[in-house]
Length: 397
Image (cartoon, helix red, strand yellow):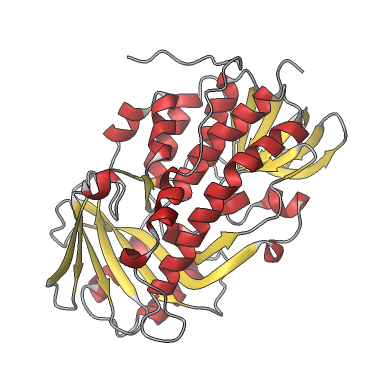
C-alpha cells in the first residue's frame, strides 16, 4: 500500500514521537489517550547519545533544550546535608549521571504534542474497548462508542499497557518486578534548591530520598525509592499509594519529614514498581508495541525516553520502507532495536543491584560497569537514513 491509517494508543512520549515520524513518512495517524488531557510534571527524563540525534532529526532540538530542567549537577549528601560526591551535567560529554538534555516527562510530552497536533488526530478521554484484526486491517471499538478500521495499531501506552494485555496476554507474563518502588511528586521549593539535585541514600537500608530542581524555581520534584520485592500496589489507587509511601519512609532522616508533609496537596503524585517488560516479540499480526509497553528498561536505566524516541524513529522508518507491510516492517524494527533494548535493560538491572547495599545480591557500582555495555546502551543502535522513503520534513527556523 502507498500509505497507511495507523492508530497509536498513548500520548505520553513514545506515542507522539511515533506520530511525528509516521506522519512524516506519509501515514494518516490517530492517537487515543485515556487521560482527559496531557499529564503535567512527572519525573525528569534524559536524552543521551543516539536519542539526541533523533531529536535533532525531528527538528525539535531547540524546543527540547528550551524546556530543559537546566540542572547544573547533583550532590549526594549525608543525613546532615554534607556533600559526599559531586556530579556535573557536562560530565561524560553530557551523557553522565545528570544528562545535558534533562526534561520533565510532562514537558517533553507537551513539546511532542505541540509539534504533531496540527497533522495528527488526538482523541483524549477515550480508549480502545475492543480490537479485532484480520489479514487486511484492524477493527477498533472505542469506549466512547466509535467504530473504526485501521491498517495498523501500535500500543504506546506504558508499563501497564491495556493494548498489550488485550492482544498479547496478561501483564504477569511480561512485567518483571525489580524489587524496588519509586515515587515522584511536585513540592514547593522551600529547601533553597538552586539548579543542583540533592540525593540522600540511607546507609544499609536501601531507602533514598531526593529533591530535583526544575525551571520554575518556586517548585521542586521530590523523589523516593525503597526496597519492596513483594509489594505490588494498584497503579490507579493513589490514596493507597500515598499510605504505602508514608509507611515505608517512617523514621527516615534528612529532609524526608518536610518533603512528606506536602504529600496530600501535590498535583502530580506518582508511585509504581521499578519494572522491566520482557517479550519475545513486539508485534502480532497488524498490532505492534513501542516504548515501555514493549520493552520498559525501568527508570534505573536512565534510558526509557531514549528507547522510546529511537524506537519511534525505527518503527516508522521500517514500516514505511516495507511499504507498510506489517510482517516485514515489524521484523526490521525488532532486528534493529532489540540489542539496544537488551543493553539498556542490563544497565537497569545492574543499577538496582548496586543500590541494595552490602550482601550476597549486591552488584557493582556504576564506576565498575563494563564500558562497552555503557556505550552500547547509549549509542549502540544504527539510525538508517531511509533514503527513498517519503519524508515530509518540517522546515523550522
